[in-house]
Image 1 (cartoon, one colour):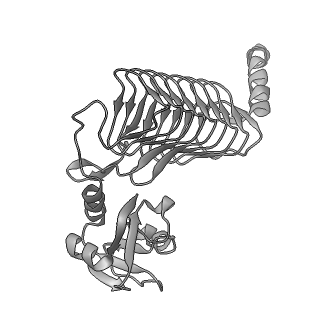
Image 2 (cartoon, helix red, strand yellow; image 1 turned 180 degrees about the horizontal axis):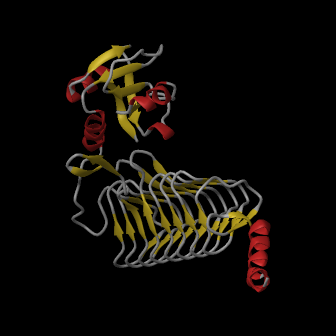
Length: 311
């Protein structure tokens, strides 16, 4: 998530009640989770085991709850509750704004695009040229849609991230400050659901086609020209390369990477990274030739046990 304008670190420190270690003249240009940070971004961690990763990330400003060495060119914001501090910054710059009209006045829709009756378009949505938004679709705040995109009836784009911090008092919801970005020539099937990122973007690459009832989790990145069949579920922060094919009811775990050109057969479960340009099947998904040999071997088990017990 990028700020509308750079913010002095001293201003941020004052608002969250933090002390500054390092360069107190820095300017923050955005805020993001550690896996998507860029120079100028704020990130946080409240677990010492992740300190090194956060300090070595591209982030310029890191919110921590323990004093540690600050790398050159960066700054640390030291406070007792990094998560609450981080979440408060997101909430300040992405405040809750109820939608009182079917199409927000702040939405930017190209005149050549068609928005059917019943579709809901949220605040700060951008819809490009020659798009077709069918009846009863929902396009949430800050969604960006490119050109020649079709979103079928009942699709729900830009819902909150399913992301909670476990605390002693239960699960605390993170404010979803990210976006959904849909590039050119994408087709989104009926009743698909696509979550926006917690503070980064959920991205659907150009030319990708989603069948009906596909779910895409927060911060997932889907490459160009992918084919994703019905009832596929893609976990948060998963990264799927270009030209990947996921057949019906494939489940992709969070943070998994699927390489370019991979094909995953129906009902498979992807629980770890998969190389590109190969075909996969099974739970957990593995090379389809290996799985086929395993299934063939299983057919011989009854005969094997019959001979064993006849001895």
